[in-house]
Figure: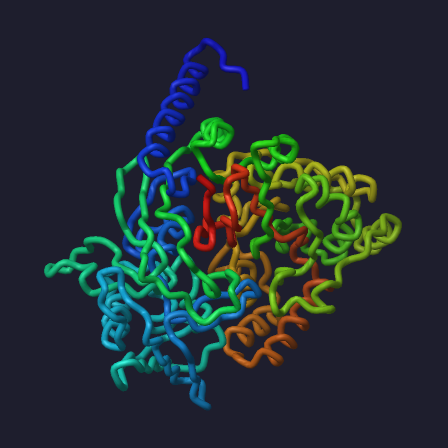
Length: 525
């Protein structure tokens, strides 16, 4: 990078030097910590309250829920050793593990679980996920009671196929169990005293958050390997230091100097990190989506034939290879390739066929009307390069495609208002396909940001929310995919990819579903 001798250049240089100096100090202070950069500060240490992605990534090391997601998007026991569901689907019985301790040394009891759920369900807690579990939500909780010292029963108003999945989400703070001592006598939150492999240590606002190893931590039953939020979760480092570094140049400098152990990097650094002897490139697929949103109420795009032609004009493998810097793999399904629900039906996608696309356009009565793709140029998403590739390919089929570049905030506003034709978009991970569908499908009159309001699609989404049996859910997801291929309300490109850099001293996999995950990770001295 060239730093010019102007105001902007001096600012960048100052930030770069200050950031590196800070990192050096931190590295010497805790030599065996894993030092990681994140782009913004913690918003709150209160699980699931005033959160964002960076906040969720810190919290997941501190707290755990009764259940958690594994790599395949299945919900597995975590603080519970078993979960039983009543035949009517209304009562869930959680048998707690007997080896779980809070960071203050006290054992986890059924009464602690009741206290936590009671607290989460109070409006004054301001839990981000309250609406999901309150009256009218997808999994309305009507009662939480301890049936003995290590058993909790949670009762729902009606059966739900997503109750356990909703509990396990990062935006819910993983419905993490904290010790009642986390809250002062007046009800104010003090600090998170959880059960996770790392415990709260220090927060210097605007600079760093440090977590310390919880030496008494015991992993849930596992096969010796990390597995999402479950599996082996040993804290192998003395601690974790999350450095707040918004500037990408400073992050890169910190990695190159060795004062940062790992961090997310821009995809355009992939070639450099591949050939750097001191660095390693870490690429990890997650359940998020890169796609083209299509406004199905647009005068031109309301015709399914035009939408199908757009999909048929795309050489998806070539587009994905270019847009992802060779890290992605084409996936035309809303279901992630790593999901337990990704089967042969989900693998189907429109065949690349320019001539067939032309015929489809002719049959649809398309007369060359302009079609605009909105894109942004954020470095960590493929919005713009995917749009550029799609434009070139669609023009070959006779589609009059233009690109409108907007800043990300404006792009979001346009989507939420419904004021667009096509948007090149990335959507954060949601491990249950039904929860992912909910981002796209529903009543557009009530929520203009939704993509598809086909009555059958809405019916199938609702069925996936209620049905808990895996085989029956699979049939719902397969029918949904077949309908999507016919109607093409959007064009799914590929699952999101996390691109991280690390020093060669780092051992283990430091990222999962776009979050830092630093158990079973160590750094050589």
